[in-house]
Image (tube, rainbow, N blue to C red; front, top):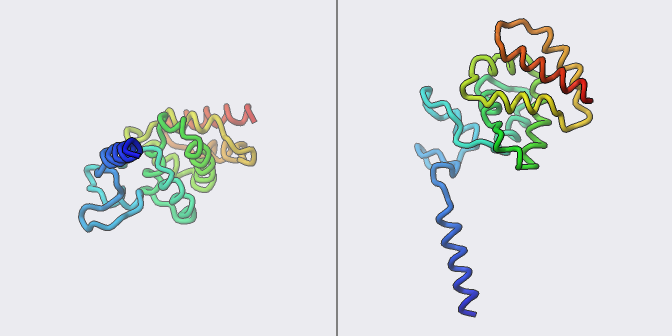
Length: 171
């Protein structure tokens, strides 16, 4: 019985010590809990970085707000992608599907954010996702054709087209 109590005490101490107050989702100005995108938007203009990568909450909020995406929301969405997220199966599946939904609905906004905020975005991870749509019902041909209609002097646009072309060849 004493060993069980000891094990439970150690587990409690370990879980309490793993809490990261910097990432607890609370807005320190008012003490209220905010969604990850709201925490992102409440940051200063000079420090527009996300608190974390691989946040499924951000992906789901973007999916819920799909009819009213802004540059800030798109930036929060795209900066959420990371190579480190590939081992998170749930995040990978949902984020890949939402990425294609976002691109299909807002191709120009997607390109604008990719081109203007490339230091904040892991572009290579976005390209990887573009080349490997996980859902069979994603209309990659249609998205590729819409991207080809966008004219902008940005190397990222060329890369986006290249990786979408790879996806069309693989589907």
